[in-house]
Length: 137
Image 1 (cartoon, helix red, strand yellow):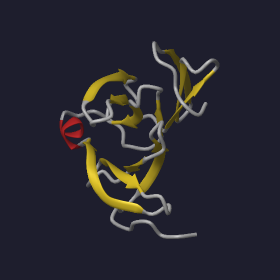
Image 2 (tube, rainbow, N blue to C red):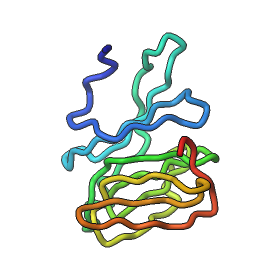
Image 3 (tube, helix red, strand yellow):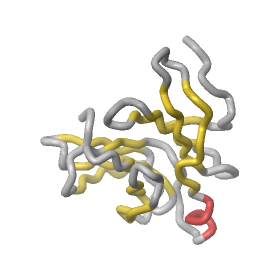
């Protein structure tokens, strides 16, 4: 086991980009609700982190939830649990939209033929049909 970074207080969800060159890490700390991205080097180490998405403005609007589980679709969009439900973020980190759940979500996974997103939180399990397919399902 090799420590890659100790800069995040509560690293939780992790996912790789479809080309496996970028590692996304969710920080589940309400004091710093961010998703960071690391470029992966050939030797398996990571380059410096960069802010990918900051959930603080969504928390400030009263949306419940923290960054936790994440998945990536074939277009490179990140589907991440976060304030308000499942956030859909393009490869540049721009917030495209939210699957609003009115509940803090814990995890998500693509299944079936890849175009079904399963969501889990507390005592709730949901599914949503998507127009894109996930990777690694």
